[in-house]
Length: 447
Ligand SMILES: [Zn+2]
Image (cartoon, rainbow, N blue to C red):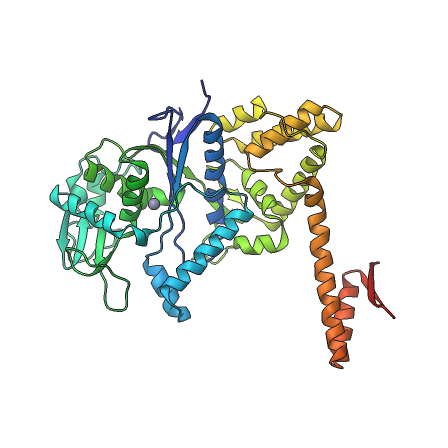
């Protein structure tokens, strides 16, 4: 019997994970809206749900992990207009950058990565069904979900229907019957992306995308739906409303998992507050694996205060672990205590503490501990590089930068730009690199 407990937001408690079909686990996570590079706050669910999927794959024979790409959204339209580029180009480039960031973080690709724009027909079909069943209505080119048509709306976020219908905080449009009703489809003007539909040319609302794509690849009911804490309401609440009402099911997903915020000095990291660090900014200074480790130092549901110093600490911790597996065999199996920690709602800090315990044993010559360490870290997506490469990587990166600077200085001298040549020499000197010009070119040494 597999020991796996997960905190289910729907029930507000940690529960034993009992799959709908143990021969095939199905999990969906909301993916990025591709208009900008992701920041550390966006990286947290990428890493933590990658870890969850790795753990599920260890325990079960088949897992299908779906994570979507939202490539139709008003934020995308606005950014493309701002930069004067084509929407398709913006979403293509941003998706490519997202994939690079994920790879650097050691996050395996999902089994399916559907793009919203490839699934418009499925969304139209679902909206049509909601209208036919009396859960949605058309008004001025929009289609809205009628929240009052679903008696138990609000279970995930625990908001009462009366409260929501009265809700002054929800955006009010004149064509809405109730303030809480939300958009399934909206009209597009000539400058906005749009698709033909029974309600005229338009585009989908955000929530319907995930309902349509999860149903297509995972079925009407599946095991786990995951995302950030800020998605509980309205996004996930509305996904549940759409899916359950369209399919006539008692649930959309059995377990709802939400990761906590990444904070900076105690405040939520966000685009709007401007206090964000992009993953690319971190990767310019530290290996992606150090960032992955740093994200695992806190429990995924707790706030995680981010700092570059924290990533540097993670790098040092990884150095310790890499030293311990230098001669480890590849035949080890994951350690039971690591599995137990991860099985306890992904208690990564306990799992990491156990890795260090194994490292201490390995350093005393315990070969079995070294093999367990390597296999357990592998399960967490850590210690996958050759230790020699891990330790040389940094030095090689430095060397490459020094050689590039020397070449730039040679070029400056050839152009008789001696001021620039001297500037480069001084800059290297300030970093502790001395140059010696000789008959065979320039050699350098650390001082
Ligand atoms: Zn979603």
